[in-house]
Length: 125
Image (cartoon, rainbow, N blue to C red; front, top):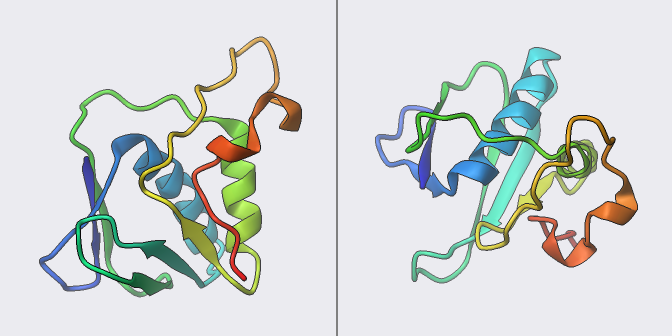
């Protein structure tokens, strides 16, 4: 489990390393373009409810990973997350869903190769 530190809060948001690696790429890309958006998730630590944070370039953000080795990223998952981050609902993720293994470097990932039930996000209503 990695940690996402948001703003000046000393309390991290605990996120699995694989999901955090994908979030880092999507968030960094959006913030590099000066694009603000929301990130929402359902609590999985035993507390009821859900949380949403407003991400913008001026708010401090730090990603801390438990693993020293970088995760292999799945291009379809990144695309799905980026599309969701661009929507009015913002990026909504589920911390308890596995991200598919990255496609081999010689074969491009296709939508058909990523089962919808395994994409680590939920669509907003």
